[in-house]
Length: 232
Image (cartoon, rainbow, N blue to C red; front, side):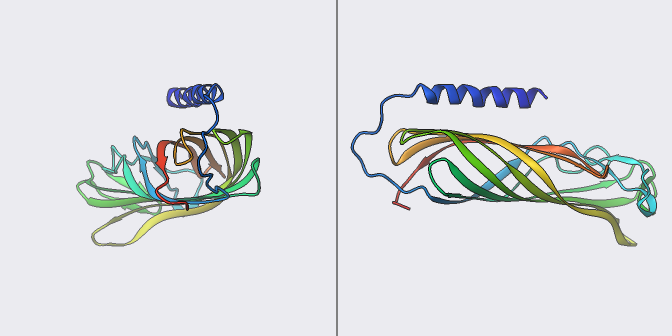
C-alpha cells in the first residue's frame, strides 16, 4: 500500500542519514544496553475490519463491515510492552505484547445474520473485536557502534482474535476465537546524540492468513526520542 511504501522509504532515508552521522562521542559515561524493558501506549487508527462467521462454522457467510454496519470503532489506544535482551553487539532477542479492543453499538437498518443467529432490522446490537498480539523475534545489527545502530529483525507472533455480536434478549454472543503463530519482519535504527539522549526508529510488518478464517495485516511504526535520567 501507499502507507507501507512511504514508511519503508522513511526508514531507508533515516538509515542513510545515520550512516553519514558525525564524530564519535566526547568523553562521557557509557551506559549498559544489554537489557531493555519499555512500557507505554499503542495507538491504532484507520482500522478497516470486515467480519464473517458462517453458520455451524461453514466456509461461507455474510461479510459485515464493522464500522459501517455495526458502528464499530476505527481507532483505539491500548497498553503496550516491549523488551530486548542482547547477547552481544550483533545479536539480540526481542519480545512485545499489545492488546487492541474495538467496540461498536448500532441500531440495525436491515436484517443481519451472524453465525447461527439472525438479528432483525431495528435491533440494537453491541459488537466487539479483540486482538492480543504476542511477539518474539531475533534481531541482528547490520552496523553498530557507540553512535549509530542499524539492523533488521524477523521472528513470529501469535495473534489471538475474537469477534462477537450480542443483543438484548439474545443470550449467546456468536463469535470466533483463533490462535495462530505467524511471521513478522522489520527494520530498526538508533542514533545517540549523547550517551543519554537518542532518537530511535522501528518498523515491523505482521501479516495474517490463517485457514482462510483470519486475513489481514498490521503495520507497527515507531519513531521517538529518549533521554536517560538514570543509569538504568
